[in-house]
Image 1 (cartoon, rainbow, N blue to C red):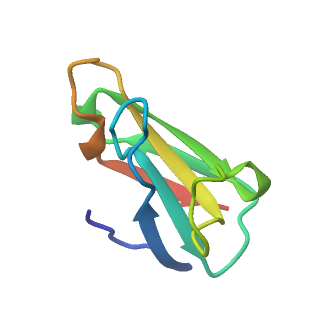
Image 2 (tube, rainbow, N blue to C red):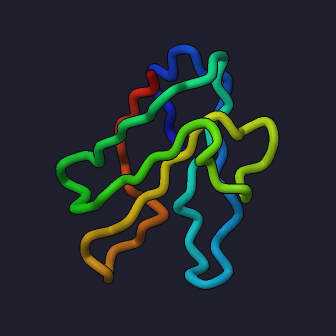
Length: 92
């Protein structure tokens, strides 16, 4: 997993793979601040969607201290491997 330019960020981790899908497509963030919102966009060539959550909306499966924000990737093509969807994210 490559992380570039994570300003104000301490770290990111992938949550354990989903029992139902076996995919590790949930990213949990540890930030140096408490974000009010998060917005993400997949890279154009990924044909995917990225959902975000901040603060109290972060899924409970995100391990401490990675509970400040989360991003979950969904492939638009169901045959695609959602474990490897590149995306950009902005926290505010």
